[in-house]
Image (tube, rainbow, N blue to C red; front, side, top):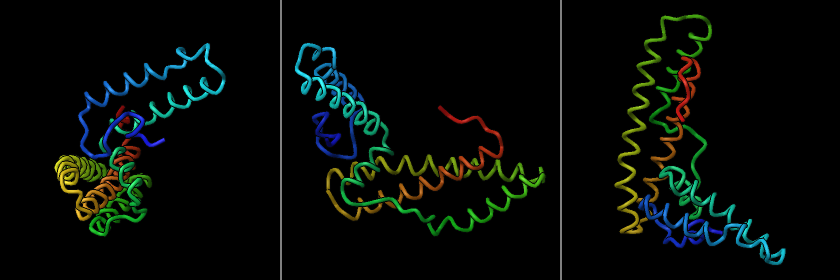
Length: 176
């Protein structure tokens, strides 16, 4: 079942987090398996299935990034597996520094930490601009804006992977 429909929402990119949470709790109470203990096996199975769908829907739609990825996929737009061209030089330099660090060259550590901060800044910038794009797309339904969202998510995904790679080599604890 489609996540927006499961929660009684109009498919859009901008969602009110409090409304989303209230809808999730309300629908979860309606479909809670304990309410179907005396029901026939088909209805009990349906309640279990709906509970799983509601949990998946809430987990996906509450995070703006996973919501946008889901929305894009439902609209026939997949994220690219290729790195964004504008990041290729930075990726190359970063990979060289990571190799040097693995080989025991500790002098690259400050450069890696600086790169990490730069990438974290990129993530913040992308996330901030996405909210504006989400609202613009919801208002206009303009496919050009949807493509901009897809391109930004591609970039974000790749930058997040770079941060993860640097964190791993610098032994930075993972965020919750």
